[in-house]
Image 1 (cartoon, rainbow over the protein chains, first blue to last red):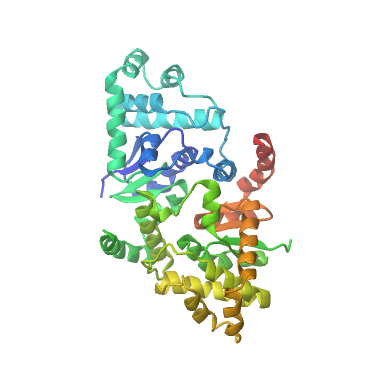
Image 2: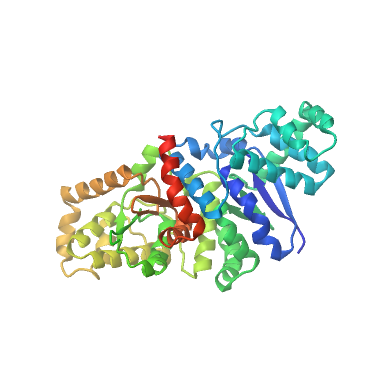
Length: 216
Length: 216
């Protein structure tokens, strides 16, 4: 199987920051490409009636505490900008522009964006900040500036977001392995178990399909 | 440290079923008592604006799939009753009646309740079903029948639920270790790491207190 593993996320999601830092290391032994897929979580929220967890009563305070705890556990810097959560349109649009040129470059840009926003604590809301970050990854930032002002950039991101929703992606991070959905940073060990099944999960794989049918 | 680890849950929560099956085994090496604490999640939902995940668009379908997958992984039976999610008042009130007589008996009753509802798939909404289950755990079911009709039973559960909320418990399962909150079955490995800290988490323990202060 060489179909890519899809890694969906919103750049404004701290749990996606943690997943972005771990996913390659955790999955590399399966030798499958990982396709990084930014989308707009806010659009999914409209479908599910959810909102940013950080703004929810009780849960919000817990989530930020939980993120600091995870950062400590993974030994990652975590400096939450006061603008959090932020609209990540410019970042996601820049990602897809870079991706059209090189998948690897776009992935490296995504990692740099997470490290900059959640690690260093620099805001990446405005196109100017995104372009400044992207200059490390392209020798034609002028074309990127043009792209970010273009209607096409909006359309591409809208299409990706629609694709996410059509695949049942409603949170961030969200991993799809041959259609099997895994929501959350904390499901990465389960993605591993799914790809390299122990007895229990191997059993589940067969039974799940039948069980899902029964609730249709 | 011999203060108990608090294990809060609603009997209607499938993730609590998984946690109930794992928590003792995972934590026994720390030799701390585990205090089982049923409460009414619906009351917490009113505070947080959340609702039963199983009834949420997209997420609900995912959650049930996720539960079947976890059950497969843990090799646990999982047969979801059509009455799910159910009001767990009678079960929780019976638990506290048993607990006043024996902590251990109440814990065993809780395990039996989870196994009956989520494993076998028998409904436990009505007091009659709860009493039938409890006859294994008491030689005075007549007194339990009386209790379940008593205003005091309601008051005790109301007080426990208020205690949960006052401690910041807003989901199920929810573990408190000396006040440190862990939400979800998937945080049990983190509870272990917290109690037996590796380098990263030990570092986090000190930094977290300071960070939480800063957002107050």
